[in-house]
Image (tube, rainbow, N blue to C red; front, top):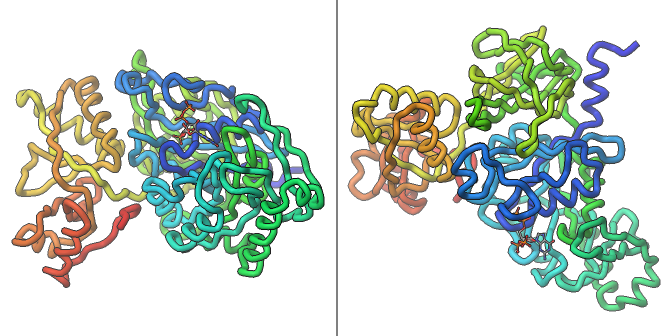
Length: 533
Ligand code: G4P
């Protein structure tokens, strides 16, 4: 007989739920397609969303998405590999970088950090890595585009170690400089080199052929010698993968390859199965944990409205954290104690939706008609559970919002309050500005576009936005707020966040924030999650 929770625990052990974090153009869409190609995509492949005109499909859920050819929505790609079920959650990038990008990381157990071999660490990689570190998410690194000229492998490792205080532990190592890739050494099987024969356009898996050391040495003398010497050096320096250090966020296993030519992609996919952690017991608000084998509990990490204009629906993305989710079951929304019926549960992938009947820990379910659900909500069955609230992230864009038509100020207030509650933007107020002109705060400017579109379309209250010249937010308290508002040296402003009544100090840049600190050394100034300095 299966023990209680046995099915959930057994299925959880087979799950790997992860995201790829990268700067735009590092190759995330290409890698996603390559991973789906290597694995057996459970959800239809070829629909990985990407830039308009590419193989992917651009969502037309909102008119503005159509205009820009980008998708606001995270797709969840599910595929099977070596007996495991992999859930790859997309972190939107490009201009649609927003709080949602960060929130996706609340729903994964591991991240693949994708780095362009020529560019190394870039701004969005840094921001996303900060969130991973803050949330204790282990990171696997993939150095991409080794098929074209780039930086030296050792130099890239050095950068990761220096900037992220993360020990890079190579699992594969390139033979040949970037742009002259001869093959890869799998450090776990050092006596050979893996040689790749590219298929035209990378349309099919590259052919991978093990070549014994003697032949690799004969064929690629200097490159081979150098690669093996570098590996010896790294080994002597302790750059060896250790599970405990990796899971604790102290080290990152590093892989090299080329997503476009499918080089090194299988090894990365194997690493997700072999190294990434399976869903585990999740911490509960107020202490204790919810084991994966406990009755069903899930976390809403993203709410997307208006995905289908015809139906004006709202879809909540839920990560199953424990137990078995079955479509049709009635669960409880922890925040209100009210029941929620899950009749319309889907797996959501790009534009396509298909009904989901059963889901296990690590899987993501889209709940349609989820008007009552909010980001950060816990849903549970049988035994009550509440997961900790979703952190709010450091906004970098600020704008005063006003109704175009003052006679619609009631609708305006209702709409702004609703969008705040849904987590579309953060809403800030101050006595100086008054209630009629709240300040919207966002991680990415795309969030403002969503506000404009939804205020006009859903709440019949068109708005105008006036961007403010601030880009840095710090947490403070009443004393700090008062000091900032009377500072004569620093250009800045203090406001209160409606959602949690926290004081935020806004500055044009970090130099101004530092000047404020010098002017008022006792004033409180806290870094917010993902604030970067
Ligand atoms: P993103 O989702 O992270 O923004 O990146 P995306 O996959 O769209 O890739 C960005 C560009 O980098 C694309 O070129 C893509 O072909 C290229 N690329 C991705 N992986 C590799 C790789 O391993 N090697 C090389 N040499 N290039 C790679 P593009 O010119 O912008 O678009 P496209 O016309 O090639 O589609």
